[in-house]
Image (cartoon, rainbow, N blue to C red; front, side, top):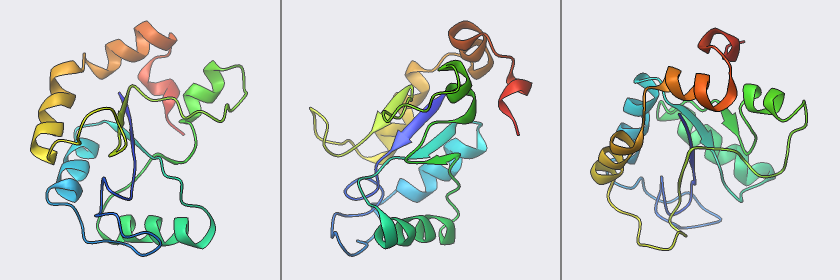
Length: 135
């Protein structure tokens, strides 16, 4: 499963153009999801130096992303080699949604309630075997 995660107001408190304090549970939950095999995309409106600062903050806090404001490689292949501007994900975590962003413990529970086995999703949705997504 691919999860696209916003930065300001989602991982950290919104203090743009600065980096706010981490939102309680965000860093731990993202690291846990990553360890469980979920693919993470940092999906933010930050660009240039401000984006670099956000990426550095995440790296320094042990959060690793599979892509930054971009699609995962196998999705680009599935789109015929084209990389659309819209980031393709199975779940988007963003403070600007229709409802208030729940706390990260609840986000973790939501992710696990709606996720079929990751390999099954790849096989059903894209026709790729897991080994095809690496590299």
